[in-house]
Structures are given as C-alpha cells and as structure tokens.
Length: 252
Image (cartoon, rainbow, N blue to C red; front, side, top):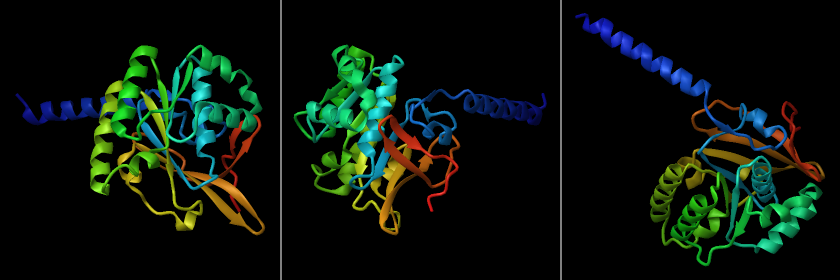
C-alpha cells in the first residue's frame, strides 16, 4: 500500500470539494442596484452582515430595501426595530422610496413583518427571530440597531461573548441577516474598528464624505467571509426608485 499516494489522493479530493463548494455557493441577491455586482452575485446565504455607518449614512434604506426585494421574490422578511415604531418606519420608507406602494400589502400578507421587542436584549431578539423563522419561514432578517442592544450591557467583554452566542444561534436557524450598527462619525478618516468588525461575517461601511460645499455618500465592502468581493470605495445615492451603487465610478 502506497501511503503517500493514498494521502495525496485524499488531499486532491478535499481541494476539489472545496473548489466545488465555492463555485456553487448559494447567494442571496440584495436587489440593490450595483451592490450585488460588488458582492459577485449577492450575500452568501446564511451569513450575518453589519451595515456600519454614522447618522444619515443610509443604513435603514439599505436594510429595508433588502427585505422588500426578498418579500417580492418569495423570501419572507422580518424587520426588528429597537427604536422606531412600525408606522414610523413604513411612513419614512414610503416617503424615501415611492416604489414601495405595495409594502402595506406585503405586511398584511406577512411576507414582510416589522416587530418592536419589549426589551433591548439579545435574548429577546433571539427568541423573536426563532419564533418568526419557525412560524413564518423567514429567510431574511434585519436588526435595527445593535447599538441599542449594546447599551444594555455592563461591559464590552460581556457584549462580545453574548454576540458570539447570538450569531451561532442564527447560523443554526439558517437566516441571512443585516444588522445596522451606529458609528460615532460618518467620516471615513474618523471611523474606528468596532466589535462588529471582528465578529460579524461581513461588514459594509457607509460614509458621508465631504467634497467642497457638499457631501457624497459612499460605501465599501470592508469584509465578506467565504467569498471574494470588490474592495473599491464607490459612491451611492438613495433615489426614489431605490438605492443605486455606482460600481466603477470614483468618489472624487
């Protein structure tokens, strides 16, 4: 028996299997113009992505459009809000995106749910997610925002450990999530790494950049585990017909 040959065959098989898995990776299309192109087809299915940015960076617009497109294509969505009410979110999104004229029908049919937990605790959010995923076959979820949950913890280590456990639960539930995270600034040069940058599967940074007498919104995919992606800093706009990411264009 040639032990070396047998070992080499096993290694080749493992490499082939790994390549096959990467090639046929299931992806969730965000439906956001330009973003899926930057993600090589979409977010890897079942991953947990943070939308990280300062006030007015566009986090809620990205997150809600992600759920809306999913609901329109048969993937039920859940929006967990820790600040605004359902009515406020729907009113604000309809004002931002006139294309969402049918969002009330999606909510009525439970293809899209907006829920506000009674407590700002990860355990409460986890129980809510598990219940809705089981009862309504939710495939996409948004948590807006993790910053409110973080404030309920006494120290950073406790939050980090609980967040790890929470993400492990989500992986078992097989749901793809976007979580908004408040940065202290919307300026790229002043933004610092936070806990979410290390523990989440992916990070999309959203910026407001100063250019003379106006501001330009821009984004970069800071990381996305398990797949290659664009690393360019590109401009985007929140338009009446949805978020538009201008792939290939320079910010300045």
